[in-house]
Amino acid sequence: MPATPAWPPKSAPRLFVAETLAAGLSVRIEGNPAHYLARVMRVDAGDTVILCDDVTGEWAARVSDVGKRDVTLAVAELLREREAVPDLWLCAGLLKKDRFDLVLEKATELGAARIQPMLTRRCVADKLNLERARAITVEAAEQCARTALPELCAPVKLDALLAAWPEGRALFFADENGGEPAAQAFAAHAGPAAILTGPEGGFDEAERASIRAHPAARAVSLGPRILRGETASLAALAVWMARAGDW
Ligand code: SAH
Image (tube, rainbow, N blue to C red; front, side, top):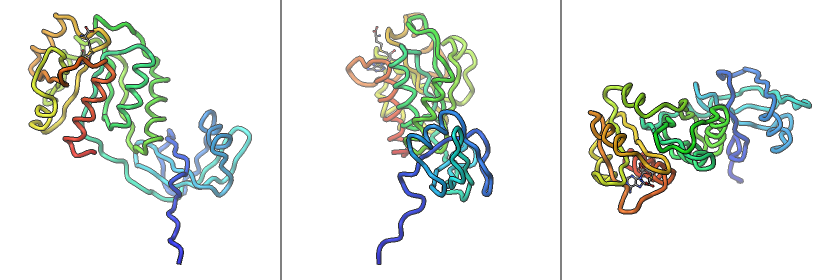
């Protein structure tokens, strides 16, 4: 007897939507996502699409109608509840556009709970198009089958971030000048945490001193080589996730 086909198919398109999903709900998709479903993925009435809402989780839905500019879906059944990702923030110095795009995409894939872009004295970039940045994280989440989007925050100045640092959250400062080996420091910690990495030019001495002086901060090393900002962020996340059992 042939094996029962898995339903929904693994290849079904995945999409985050703005409304909170429930069985029986009819969802109308417009704009770019509708174009993606109808023209790129070429869905037809009866096809399955996987919908996520970042609230309840992941649902199977059936295409009920493909219009010129919209696609209508009927939500069928909950496939997975919204996942819990490790409580880890990435506070990353803002980088030039392409480099930071990479951080947004990969940090989402790696499972960061929050991405906090940070402005420091040596940042070359000083602006982030939040809408575009959010679209990158949503696309990455769809691609890697994350059911919980990372929380993407507007850029803040390093000083403001440190001043408002929440009690009880460890701040692992990636310092190329040295610190405890990251894998060791992460392994010894349980509870909420954040990884802090600098921009292209790193931190200046005053910034480094104020980070180090912060009660939540612990300097960690990511090895003997000086990594680019994006590499430092992603390598540190990977080491953290390995420790957190999320790998
Ligand atoms: N200070 C350098 C390079 C900065 S690298 C310069 O002057 O050009 C960008 C950021 O990556 C750093 O601020 C630091 O947070 C992180 N980083 C890079 N290599 C690292 C390492 N070996 N250990 C810890 N953090 C590192």
